Image 1 (cartoon, helix red, strand yellow):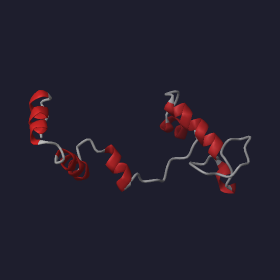
Image 2 (spheres, rainbow, N blue to C red):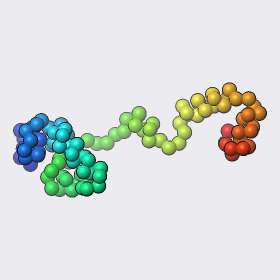
Image 3 (cartoon, helix red, strand yellow):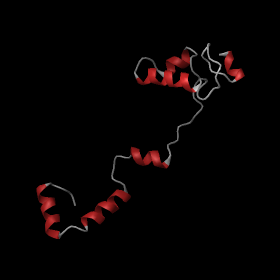
Image 4 (cartoon, helix red, strand yellow):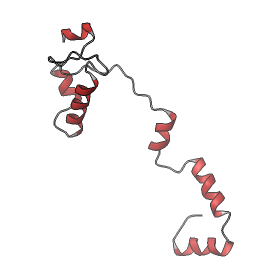
Length: 103
């Protein structure tokens, strides 16, 4: 892995600039696809010196965390309550009985 010193892609026939983990964008995407398809792993690629270990410490952004939550958030509950508040009480009662909805 001596090529890393001159800031070019680790792939032996590539002279493009490094963008991620010692590879140019094209070769990183190739490696990423191979991992995604289950043909190899990042650990295996690192072991065989085809890709550099990541120095990125995963910290999910607030937006990413929101998408990954499985429980209803306060914001969703607020809009649910707002929508249910516009329904007639008889409709709410009917929904609760027929659908088993926890209102």
